[in-house]
Length: 356
Image (tube, rainbow, N blue to C red; front, side, top):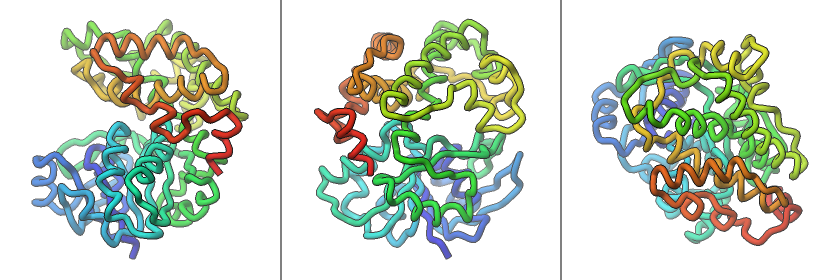
């Protein structure tokens, strides 16, 4: 029986834990929110509804991630990406040889930051660290212990760091999630961080509506002009990929690739026509993870990697500046800089060598 530790009991963490438990894994889950922990401890199971209808029995629910990973074969990290560095520091003393760690998702540079943080903590265990391009599920919690699965992605890229470890990770996870597909290195998964393409733009261009408390549907109320702006922003991300020898698909094409049967000539039409996105409501605060996560763990490393390859990145740089001014945060210094990724001072060629 595969022993799985899921760290983070939000929408995605509960979905991962519930499904893997329903497939016969021994699943332990940790969460810092005591209200969630108390509710799950009473139920000791998770019910997935919507696209799935399964129950998963939990072996343990705790607040301390360091405790639930002891003896685990697989560690599924489902926290916000902005918590990855702190989590690596917490786990460093108790990680054991041959444990597999998958960041769901890694956002941009997740595996690099996780590895660099463990290195700084003196952790020298033989670990298999991997990152997923995105979360498998589009899902929302109906109540604690019950998650509505709105959509399930057909293809999610996954790479380990170094990339020579990828097949080992896939051999462990594919019996449960065949949607995970190998890609050459973590720059593929990192640069296909579509959350950092869609989320900041929608929030920033609707900041006044959000602050007034005007609720709206985040994706299906997309407008043509905002979609066109997102495509121009996305072109900078695609250019970063090209600079590193990676042919990335556009955000418009990804929407159709990740979910089968999505129709529409434009990005705006495809966002509106995607049933997995249909009922997702916008955040009710400007200080939301679509900025506080996607700027420091998406936009910031996009720009850093782009500039290391000689690109200017003017639109993404502007997005970062506006978000910093709006929230009074210093995302450039606190986010995933090349220093925090262990890539500071490296050339484009040296960065690529660091991935294998």
